[in-house]
Amino acid sequence: MEGNLISLGFIPLLPLTGALLLGLLHLSGRRGRRFPERVYGIIGCIGPILSFLLALSVFFSLSSLPAGQRFLSHQVYTWFSVGDLKVNMGFLADPLSVLMLLFVTFVGSLIHIYSIGYMAGDTSFGKFFSYLNLFLGSMLILVLGDGPLVLFVGWEGVGLCSYLLISYYCDDRSNVVAGNKAFIVNRIGDFGFVLGLTFLFWAIGAGGFDYLSLQANAHLLTPTLGLVICLLLFVGATGKSAQIPLYVWLPDAMAGPTPVSALIHAATMVTAGVYMVARFSFLYAQVEIAGLVVAWVGIITALIAALFGMFQNDIKKILAYSTVSQLGYMFVGVGVAAYSAGIFHVFTHAFFKALLFLGAGSVIIALHHRQDIWQMGGLKRKLPITYWTMLIGALALAGCPPFAGFFSKDEILYAALASGHTGIWLLGVLVAGFTAYYTFRLIFVVFHGTPREREPYDHAHESPKVMTVPLLVLAVGAFFAGFLNLPALFGGHQQVSHWLAPSLTETHPHGSLSTELMAIGASILAFLIGITVAYRKFAAGAEKPSYQGFRKFAEHKFYVDEFYDAVVVRPYRTAGLMIHRLAEPYLIDGVVRGVAWLYRMAGLAFKVLQVGYVRVYAVYMVIGLSIMSLLLSQSLNF
Image (cartoon, rainbow, N blue to C red; front, top):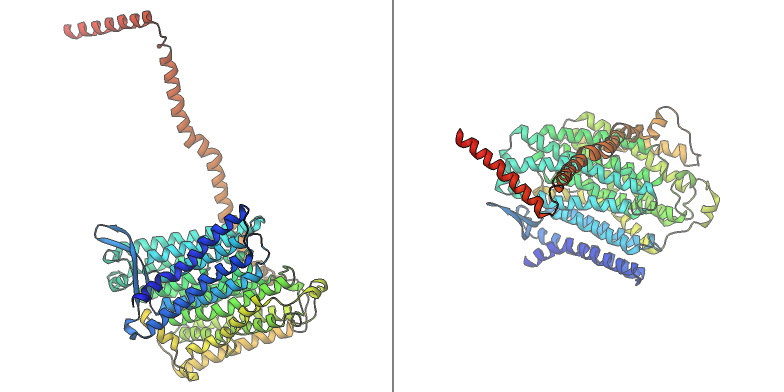
């Protein structure tokens, strides 16, 4: 077992070491000694790949243990101690964290390999891989942390890396603004998260602030305090996982290189909020109202993001809003206490969403960085591997049986229906139809019909193998991953749910066979309607539409960004300017300068007495003695 504990510590350490080494090599390259891109690529990929292999070894070690004992804990050192309380920097491997480890390291490794081809020729090749390794290492700390404080270290780490990678092309001011937006919006969510942790520590943290201790003492929480803590923690999740009202940063994150989009949207940062809620399932299971809030926020986010995705023209932003929408499904799952269903959708989503983003990157490279789908068309013949792999990803995203997304999405909708949340289920089915529509709108417009711009089409060609091989591997995952949790209706045993059971507090009821069949039938019907409408409108070719009325309103994302800018950003900026121009110089700095002026004036006043002549000082002494004598005589007479 000791070897496994050592492996546990090395899983995040390997990519973090790679980030440090790549950063040093990049700095040395800037001083004149440049290394070949192959060196940076190998160093950048070796850490994630080795971390995946170590995660596999931990998985097999846990598999050999009885279900109730499937956890490994590794206390690295004592972080700090206050009185009798000690907080350790420690790692916990249990079924939930190990499942996350497996797909984060696996998908992350494929994205690193893909990046070698996508970023070829970039002047800061080494810096990019350094940031990418740091991002992955931070996510692994978040997943492996044995308590919320260690989780928070990784939580803030992925937030920092998102800023660095989104604003990677910093010569363009809009990219820097997008990076700032992601960073600031996440800080708003993190404020709620920190408050939630503070109340949690105050309530039940004295007995230990790791997950196992908190779970043992969770019964001490009052219902009101439990609700407050759960909602505050969820505020943090809305920032990190882009839910209403803090979702606005995620579409702008498309400013970063496409591999960054794949890593953020598929395997790392945006899944952190869902993981956090599932990790605290022992709290949310006690507070049903908090779960309902999570579920309703999730389904409303899914609906609104799907509406936005139906009218976007940028290939990456369509997929970005798709991510926001799918995250909404995940929160529905954990909100109705079907935690394994929510995490399973996180798992399958990692494969097909990474596949779609990397496929979009292949299209963008082939067309010399064009991203408007209405400048594309007919690319099926030019990019056959990209087309067929993206088609598999699209079918998985749209919920087509038997692709991965169908099983995970259907399990969430079935759990909502079985739990009596009919309204959530109906909206979920509607979102499924919208998803099929906008997904295949993208596929038909980009790959079918005739080229809309001839010159880039004529020069388009398939990406190199370093980019297409990851697409093929992810396509296999997008097709087969759903079978890992096949329900009994299809002859399966729901292996993923059984694997996760020791880590989660599942409380949702199981419905009847007729309920399950109704959920499945509605999902398939929604998929068929969505893809049929998209086929009729776009398969034979279509020109860029001009939207009016509600469609134009949706195309502009309900003007939410403009609303936030008018109500929050501009007043905040105006207040900042007033503080800078008035409060700082006249109040804060004015007090400091006023004190200095008084001392200077006092010094000038006393300066006239310090003339340097003995005879003057003798006169001062006589005057002083005379005054003292007068005062003394007056006091004696009194």
